[in-house]
Image (cartoon, rainbow over all chains, first blue to last red; front, side, top):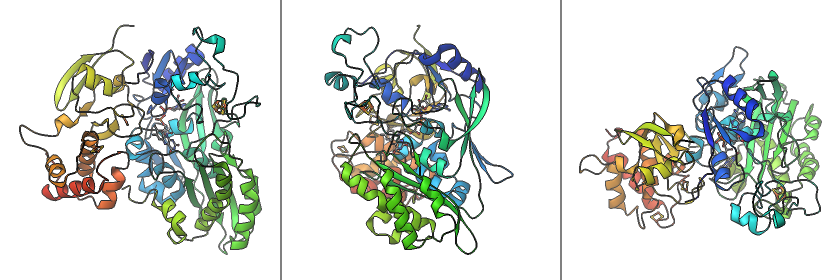
Length: 360
Length: 161
Ligand SMILES: Cc1cc2nc3c(=O)[nH]c(=O)nc-3n(C[C@H](O)[C@H](O)[C@H](O)COP(=O)(O)OP(=O)(O)OC[C@H]3O[C@@H](n4cnc5c(N)ncnc54)[C@H](O)[C@@H]3O)c2cc1C
Ligand code: SF4
Ligand code: FES
Ligand code: FES
């Protein structure tokens, strides 16, 4: 049996209490929501917190409401299953339903939360391994040997096995919710004991660094996710993974756009997931404004934007192929935005569309 | 650190248990409550062998810390049969050959039970989607889907008990 290390368990009853435990214990404390990322990482010793602060018993931490302005206000404790099955969300933000409905497996979505998904640890084939595996090749810089361990002599801890000459970690942002919420212009409310409340765009929540991948400070709790409503907005999420269930994204395209009555794009945001240590908001999105999404416009956009995908050899599939299919995924997502049915877009489109189809 | 003590309902019976605070629900069920029907496969969320119901909803017991379920109602595969009568899902699994080595079976049974509780007339697509977090190395899945359909028929579209 793979077991968790010892920790002190603290079930917070309010957000203030959770923030206060984080403030008191600094990096030795860690929040626990659904635990579907935290618990495997505890078992493999990627994390060794002294205190785990459970958010599960905070009243009102889960729930979805639609405000007077049409925006969705989602509690970070909302499970991915509840979010993916919400009819109001599916009608207004279909890309969000599909993104969230594609995460992991139905058994995991039943407990995994949206807040945990946004703060999901970055991933790497050299990191998501058990302790002995990592020890045997010498620990990489993202998870060095524990302090006081007898192995410090040859324990590693300064090298990146993906890019040994690199001073930084290239672990991959693997959240499906992050790119889609960034594309939709969503914001999160963060709360800390020291600095109170602040709002930050999901697009600004991340750093391009496999270790310090969140701009959220360690003492901040995600307390709310707000997805604005834009009249006439379309959204789509295209995810590449090996199996139709369980697997993390190896590439994803999250796209959202609004259109004028005559069909020209009035606003667009396209985000690439799982190709860097953060979701990449594509600057080229602005070039779509004022244009109709014709085949030519889409092809030009996909060609230019796919250059941002520089996959490293630390997830699934060959890097050259992953780079190649990026343009196809961008094309598919934009065609869906203009109204093409993904089920008519060959095998790839049918697989993508199946994502959230039979969830209800 | 003293060992924590929690109260919960397991298969309808109130239970109080003291355990090592780092343990998952899976470890407490198998090691402290001696309910070994729930299996451990990957122990990392990747197979579904450890599925149980927590307050009626399916959950992976290998990913839930036992301290998180204080006060909850847990149903394991041991709780499906009543008296000496198998649950219709268990009958159907037998009749359809939906269990070979049997290691995945408890996880499939409780996950399917949660589906039929929610959707007594689930269609094939809904069944395969609901069971997409359970891996079976033996059957090829078709017999499992057939068994869930047969159980749904046996139950006449009514949620069990
Ligand atoms: C087999 C398997 C497959 C998976 N596949 C996918 C996939 O395809 N796509 C995907 O995106 N994820 C996947 N996951 C990862 C994970 O299940 C999800 O990302 C999930 O949404 C995490 O949410 P959680 O509530 O379980 O988070 P937890 O594990 O509880 O927490 C994750 C992180 O978020 C922090 N955190 C949690 N809540 C808050 C909060 N309110 N404020 C601040 N910090 C917080 C925690 O401290 C921790 O660092 C998979 C996991 C497994 C085991
Ligand atoms: S990218 Fe390099 S440093 Fe980061 S987890 Fe992978 S091997 Fe470790
Ligand atoms: S043992 Fe829990 S999912 Fe495999
Ligand atoms: S019957 Fe053997 S794994 Fe399913």
